Length: 209
Image (cartoon, rainbow, N blue to C red; front, side, top):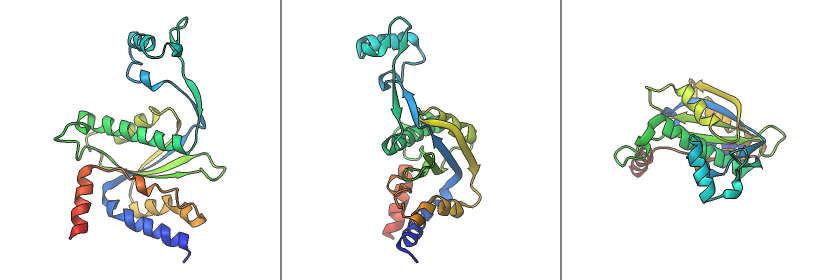
């Protein structure tokens, strides 16, 4: 067995403890570039008057006065942008799924999705995309629609998105670690697993026994 294959199996074994908590397999694709508006307007875009006031106060050079339009910048995709896009997607997904429970002291410990990420295409000529294993979403929501809306809210979100209920979780985890076989052991973001605090507490208890 090669070192890469051994590492891959170690990765799968490590994250296999989360297997029962993953319910959906998701593949998302990134745009190669996107027109990004200043983040200072993110909370104002639904009210033109608020955008106008914000522009006047903070960044007047970002407001096209004649057309009443906020000016952005074209930005290119890279590894850092891909990671930050997935962080934003996760935050949007959490809020769309749980609402203000993600912030309340009494509920935030368990009101977060679980998400494991593998980013592929960074060292090849493939379009950059990410495979995700997602779980811990409320049963009373339209999960497919919620995931789609959270993704399409991201600046670099390409329309291509595949969402499937997980029937073979171990098989999916094995698939998204496949690049370890060709030496790309960084594809799986093992250091960036996202999960509710209560899951981390459970793992801590299990490991202490």
